[in-house]
Every structure is written in C-alpha cells, then in structure tokens.
Image (tube, rainbow, N blue to C red; front, top):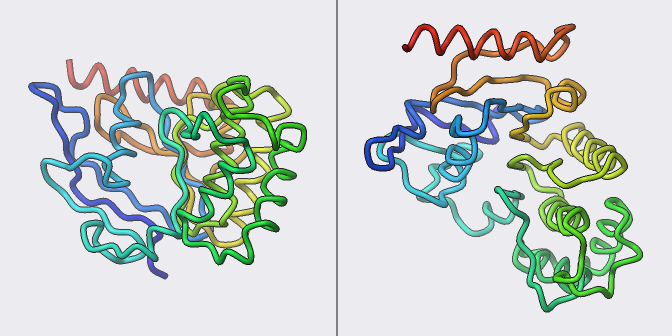
Length: 240
C-alpha cells in the first residue's frame, strides 16, 4: 500500500547548524507515527520540510507516491496540518474561519455547512461559533486550528505539538479525533513532548535528536519517559 508520506535522505542546514540530518521517514495509511525529541531536536523544521514550507538542501519527499514538487492542488486538499501555531483570520468568527478553511481545501460548497457543524461539535466550539478568533483564549484558538485542519477528513495529517495550550478536556477531544481518522485510513505524523499522551495514540514512535532520527520506542513500554531519555543520552554520548 502506498505510503501517505515518505521522506528519504532529507537534510537542511541554517548557516553552520545542521537542523535536519539525512532523515528517512515513512507514514503509512491507518498509522499514527509520533515524533518525539527535546526542544531544538529539529521536529518543527522537519515537518516544515515535509510540507514544502521550506526547501531541503538534499533529499526527497513524496505524498501518496507523488513527489512534493509535482503535487497537484487536489492532492494538497487531502492534507491537513498545524505547524507550530494554529492559523486563523483574526477578524473572522470561528464559523467563518472553518468555512474559509473548507473552501481552501476544495470542499464541495454544498457540503461545507454540515462539515463545519460537525467540526464545531467534535472540538466543542459550539459556544464560540460567532466569536472573532482574535478574542478566543489560547486553548480555544488551538481547538479552532485543529478543527480547520481535521474537518475535511484528510488522508495525511501533520500536527506539530497539537496538545499545546489544550486543557485536559481538549486533549481528550483531540485524541479521539486523531484515532477516528487513523481508523478511517489516514496517515498521521504528530510531534509531541507529552510522552504519556503519545503512548495513548501512537502506533510507532521515532526519536529525534540534534536533527537525526536515532531510533524507535515501543508505545507499550512501561516507562516510556525513561526509555526516551536513555536513548537521547546514549546518542549524546556517542556524538560527543
């Protein structure tokens, strides 16, 4: 089965700093692939490379088997993402933002009202549909960004620290939304430093350190945090 996302030998430097170093990564259909690492490990830079937001110095990326630089608009419409901070038009309401996001993802106009209703319900934004996004709390802005990224049920989902700013109820809503889409066949790449939450959703966990992928962790490991820090420490010692 064709991978939802595949990167091979991906590298990017900023000046003398190697932010991403020869990364090869696959996200399969029906899989939550978690990317974990300390702050500065290169997770956000890698995700931006995977989505074409910045260009690699070397390496390739393909989405559903098509090279990123040849990906047509209709394929991009099957991708959903939140990178670093959720985007929303500050002077538009929650509902208007979701409608705009649906149009940008080429959703059939006749389906948009129902889709937005479902997104509002799924992330429990019902009380804020007519509130301007600039007036939302940080947590509700995060819910809005996630709703916009997920509402069109994309085949590929890339989420960078998606539980940031969410309260416990929001984390549970996000977890359920991710698992529903995984079960429907989406390939999902998610970065997080919340290892306990990663263990609840991930089918595969890859550890990143200093721009390199250094190994994998078993999501069912009893002490995932200990296993993570052991892997990072061993890599640091090996590259001193």
